[in-house]
Structure formats: structure tokens, C-alpha cells
Image (cartoon, rainbow, N blue to C red):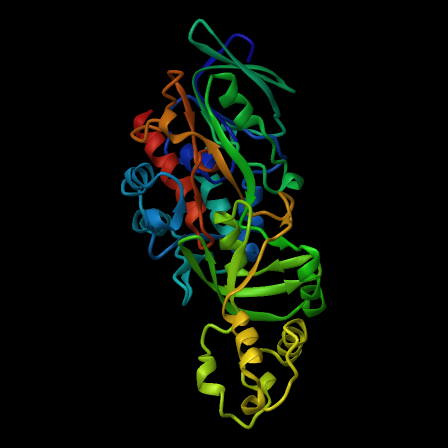
Length: 379
């Protein structure tokens, strides 16, 4: 490789890097991958079935600059992803919550992407250490020597799942070429607890439906109590919008407390909550578990706390448990028409590296495919 200059080099063989490779047929390119196999994160996502996309993909499903998101998604939306896969013999399973998954395992989509790329184009176990540019040629320093290219695409992903080889290399390269990196944090991840909520740990294993408010954002879904804090669909999505401070949870979203006031049943049996959970919250709120009609006005006022339980998480479970990394490269510094850097000609950034993060539900893989498509067409 010392003397040959490759036309296009892609760093990272995840969802965006692989999809880009399928669209570069007939071109002189290489994909450099740190791991011994491709698509590591895809293979474990969605319980091993990979939530590929969603039946409805809008800018509102993402945290980030809406116009930038829309400009990219509209060029290769969920319908085009489904059509692209279907033409190659892979049809997905649509679940009731509008999520598309592989029918058997994530290996189906990873294998399809691999088949679409000449195996000689993928160079495994190649860890990028540094990138420099001299005389309009990018020089990529790796554990296997120096690779040279005219066009460089960074598709190395974020910081989540370090055990799968995640690293900061994409952000480091961006910084080296003068880009701004917005605050990086774990996202789509569970919350740890302050001492006031340590009683949650006694409820480990219990799941319940909730509504969560973070500022003007309202999130509906499941909350799961765990030994180390709280998780579940609603909590994971809430972590995307949480910075610091309190969140507000409605633990009984389908219950009108006023309708219970004359009931002769014990209040713990009227809340629609698992019994152990109901009793734990009554203890927390200093309310005796008695017939509803015997509750005092002050006890009813305290019971209303279940409709707007406010607390500040201590933090999150961290990158080792996070589905994605939020924050990233400032999108004002990236051309939405090509994914090319505004600061360095011939340098492109895809997927999770950008300051765009989707909610749970296939939105982040959709983003990976959409950014890769836009980049491929521009190149």
C-alpha cells in the first residue's frame, strides 16, 4: 500500500460504512475495519434481530437540526431502504409498534451487505491511529501501515459499546481538521439513582407503562426497575433529551384518581400497578393502604405525586450500556447534499458521528443508511 493511492477509503465497517460500500461498485475503494468482523453492533442490536428502520421516520424522531435531518432522510427514506433490501431478497418483519426487524437474525442483513461488496475491498483488523493530509492526499496511519486516498469517509461510529471496539477516532479526526464537536454523552441508556430513589431498587424486575416529561418533550412507553436504576423503552428515549436536572413521570397515566375516591377497595388495588410497586410507593408517600373512601384530603394530595413524580437521575449507565452516543460533529460544518466537510475538501462524515441522534425504533440505522446513500451519490 505504500505507493498506491486509493480513490476512496472508508473508515469503519458498520451500518453506514457497509452500505456506502454497496453503493460504490466499480469504484476504487477500501473499507478499513478495526475488528475481526464487520457489522458488530448490528449483530447484537434489537435482541440480535436488528431493528433496521421504522414505518414512520420524521425529523421529530431525532435530536438535532431538523432541516439538516429532513434534507438527508427525504433522499433515502424508510421506503427506499425496504425496497433496496427487498430487491436483494431480504424482506423484514413489521411489528405492531411500526418497527422493522430481520425475521430470523441480524446476520441476514449483515451477510447481505457483505455479499454486495467484493471481500477484497474490506481490510479487517486495521486500527486507524491518525489521519493527515499532504499535497491533497489523505494519509491514514494504522497498525498495518499507511494507506493513502484522495477521498476519505469516516464511518467509525460513536463511543457506545466499547467492548465492540468503539473509540473516539472519528471525533479525533474531525477535531484534527478543525471541526466542532458538540457535547458527547451516552444516550438511549438507563438512569442511575439519587439516594431518595434508592427504594426503586427493591422493585427490580417490575415493568410498568408511564408517561415521562422532560421540558416540553413527552415520552410514552415502558419503565423497567433494575438493580442499578431504571431502564425500559420510555427511560431510554428520555435519556436522549435529558441533560441534567429533574424529569417528571406519570406512573398511572391511565388512572383518573378522582374516580377512585368513593371506592371501598384498598387503594393499592385501584392504581393498576403491580402490587409490590403500589405498596412501595404508598410507603414512600406515607399513605396507609386502606379503602380509598377513607383517605384524607392530604393523603389524596400526596397520592397525586404518582401523576407527576419528579426526580433528578444521578446519571446514566454509561457508554457500556448505551445504544448510541448523542452529540457529535456540528452539522453546520457538514454539507447535507454530500456529507462532505465544509472545512476540508474530500473529507466526509456519516451516521452517529454527527450531532444527530434518533430515538429507539430503527431511526439510527435509518440515519446510517441515509447518510451513506447521500455520500455515495455525491462521490
